[in-house]
Image (cartoon, one colour):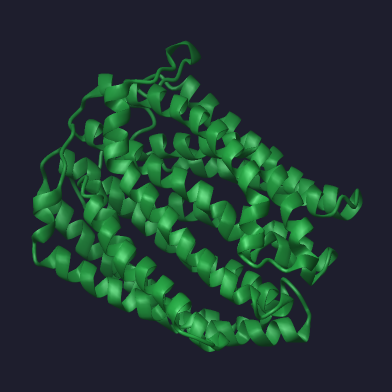
Length: 447
């Protein structure tokens, strides 16, 4: 296959690194893509606008996007297993079914999002002074949701066969479009929050076009043709079998974050803006861990499909050790440069003071999340999605919700400490589940 990479033989370290770095750069540009709005809005439109595009708004949008990204992981695992077993006919079938699902889900989620947004933001205690700003941004964002879903599904297809470079190229192109249009619409045309949202939608459209054009130009089983679009019930069932647990996990995860965001909203605009700025800094780490997770899922999926369990185990162990080392180094750097990073988003002294405190509370505990991202990613490559979802649902989502909802009069410190506490508990369970061998009972080999 012209764009694919077989990672079922030879060195374990080399293909993982070869696959990892394009994903890392891709997630970097994805975060840059998201951060540009915050940088431009925060500096040109003020802390109220910064709070409006971040905080609860960002988390609410992730409720929809995260659901679909979780669902698309079913396509990644399915195609990677088919590729490991050289089943090219099913790869082609899955490509066309997956793109059709993207279009259908895009329409459904857009309609659902537009009709539920106002009630949701009011329920989440979004302050009145930023409510209308948040709604304007979200409504425009939803108008381009189909573009976002097509791009993410196309990337899931390409990465499943080891092509992590083309998604990177497409994301870089759309990122630069977003930056240029952000400056033009917000600073030059002075369209405010709406300008930032319109720039994002256009950039998403560019990314969607590029990924579809790449699949259209492919000369192998990934080749896409509009006339071959289909909704294959059997194929959809297999995608859902793997993807739905991850999608449900994403929804529950976001719900727990929305509960936390609602509590944070009670502390006022300064805290919301500080949390938004911290969230953009925090995302630098999560983009790296996401790259680790995506790469190990594809690596495990191909090797599991090829029945090479020794490579699966060695890959997970080596990759987890690497992620732990990088996490420690990044934690130190983030704490050291916290004030400088926060000033990129807003110069308000109150916002910076709160942001510095949040970083000191949370960043040193990043390392405790590594087993969650890496072990769950490896398990999903083997088709084991239900148990990781249950572990995450109870260990992170359940504990967070109980912490916020049942403990009275929480201080800001107590609110943010919910993150490291739930990471430690959930990581411990994942490590026990994997290294005890219990995971073997729940693997699914579809290919």
